[in-house]
Length: 169
Image (cartoon, rainbow, N blue to C red; front, side, top):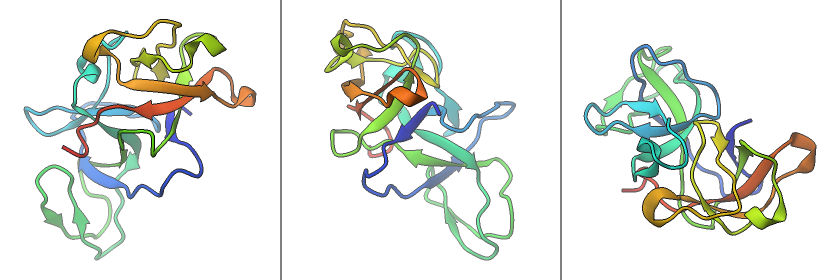
């Protein structure tokens, strides 16, 4: 399941962006924007020390872009219109991260979850898992505030919100 907006959160319209070359994406991957070439890449690193601890966090990977034939698609990085007509080479579909407590996300966790991890400022362990600990990260290294334990039937998950995102900057 990785990262996903919680059911009942406001409807977030999906966007389309350029995929990196030779990158394997998995649904639910947290993406960041490579500002050098405008590609959306998989956030890597651990404890908030990789590129994902910057404001380049952009969204959650949904799948390859497959616009309806004839329907225009607005690309996220250039504001360019591309006409439809099947799969657009090199494009992917993603859900932008909306920072702040108005949209809650469920995130898979690296470690077992417990109540002392609530209201902590955490970073991602990988593109799919939160590095959940009982200690907040300092400064700009953390960007996910936990608000509650996730559904127990689905494994180790926490619910919370992102504090920063490149999708709205």
